[in-house]
Image (cartoon, rainbow, N blue to C red; front, side, top):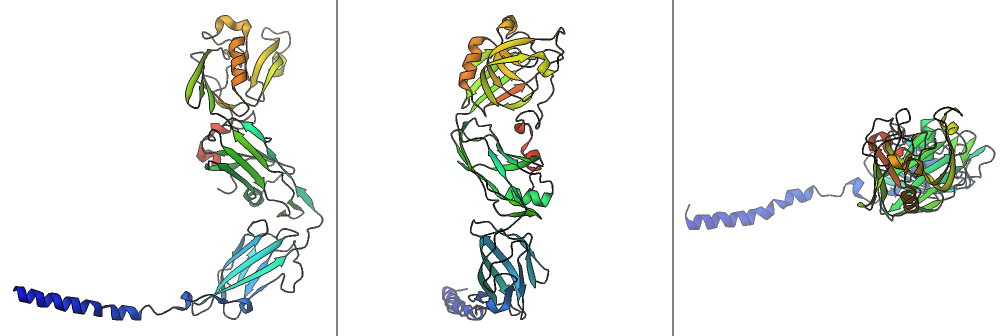
Length: 397
């Protein structure tokens, strides 16, 4: 092609290209669903609040479509910010809440609809429920108490009544919120019908703030049972303090924020009384405590029996496993495991450890051939489950 021909061809392209826009523009005409939502007040009805009277808190909320419209979405939120969950029929003709609404509460209900031509509608309604009378209340006691804890401290929730049904558990769990700064991923787990624990995927960050709230008050849980008041909890975490006890090497290494700050010769459980391996959370501290063999099932007067006044005792399990001063076994510290399951050390080291740990700090026993620390039932063994195993215990997972 000559230069002139190429110029002519280019000119034709430049002229013709804009013309291709014409047919595409015809397809941009406004569709019905692109218009502002029409007022759907006349096309949906509620079974409560239409006459201005307070709604019955013992009956689920129902919304019905009419005049050829169908419901596409419903959002019912109370004044506390709680959403009333529900479900639509397959044809969109009716929406029904999964549970009755909370008593003595104001709700804002937003209903989205669609007509046969694709046009979108919306109705916003306000309704108030009567106070719920009669029945029992589910109180929730959140823990621990306000204060500063170690990074391994789980959040606890103790219920005043058992909740075993999975659907009811989901209602309770959804109303218990945990917020931390900095933010971390975490989950509740049901320990039994009355107890929940909350922990992050890994330990809390050092110097974090954790706020726990419950919004169950007035919420329907099951016939004859509604939520009661829940006092909020606010805790902080201190430094990340973790003590690792090497059972075979008879040595404890204490780290603060990742830095090793002390290495301590220790003795742990002897054969027949092996110390549990795994992660334990400090439950508390006692400057002096009396320890007896009978408290762990050793018959009085037997060869293994003992009755001792012990100093600087840091408790790790409900069954009586401590880190404490054991001057009577000084010759074995850093050499042999001769205790009845506790982690013993010199009085000087025990005093230092006592002064440098707090409730919620981590003590991890590794090596040896003892039993595993259980996740439940003997203190706080929460961290002995993987994150996947932990989340399996949530009613919302």
